Structures are given as C-alpha cells and as structure tokens.
Image (cartoon, rainbow, N blue to C red; front, top):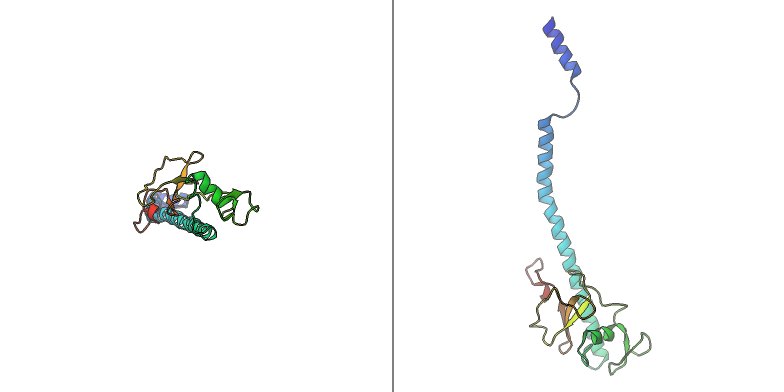
Length: 177
C-alpha cells in the first residue's frame, strides 16, 4: 500500500511544463534558424545600399546631361574645375555661359534642389574633382575642403562615379556602377 501511495503522490505533485531536454531542443532549432536567416538580412541591407547608389548616380548623371544640353556642350564646373564650381553649377541658376546666381534669377537650373545627394554607401556628399575619371580610385579619407567625398567627378569628361570601395552583389566594383 505504501508503494501505491508513493506512486500516486509523485504523479500528483508533478508540475506542468517542459523538461530540460525539450527546452534545449527548441533552443537549438531556434539557433539553427537564426544562423540561416540573419545573413540574408545583412545582404538585403547591402542590396538596398547598392540600389540607392545606382539611383543617386542616375540622378546625378541625368542632371549633368541636362546641364550640358542647356549650356552648349559644357559640363558643370568645367570652367573652374573645382568642387565649389560643380556644386554651384548644379544647385544654383545659370545662364548659357555658365555664370551662376541665386535660384530663379537666371534662365537655367537649378538642376538639383538644396544639396548634392549623399553617397548611400559612405554617407558623404562632397565631390572630388579629377582630370581623368577612369584612373581615379576611391579614397575613403578624402575631403573636398568642406565635406567628406562621396563622389568623384571629371569636369572635362562630364562623368561621375562613387567614391566607394568594395563590390556590388554581382562582383562589379562599386566605383564602376
């Protein structure tokens, strides 16, 4: 009778819940799922930055072309070849000769509103002026005198690229997008 009472008492005092083994199995499954899923979120962030970089480059390139069309084939900043001249050419109004003035005072421009867009990869909006865009390489520590450099521009060629090292998802260097 004592054995029957002990068996009955043990089952009556058992508390509901998961055993240690069951809990460890669940934790291991969650760890495996996290190891599979989390890297995909990191890649999604890189893909978003790459897409934003391509979009900003398209905007800058189209506005450089619009300026060239309005100014008889001259590129923004071509006459002075400085980052300030480039910035003023795109952010202020200008006449056919490339002289700039406050927005709305001259027939052309502004081509961009308020500021040069920042490079989504490095967050910088400064512009490094170079003679040949093809031989220019990214310089993460560069400044244009007022800001960290996000873009590399050649006023003689009218071409712009990102001041970003690294590669896109397909292996293309970011500076060559």
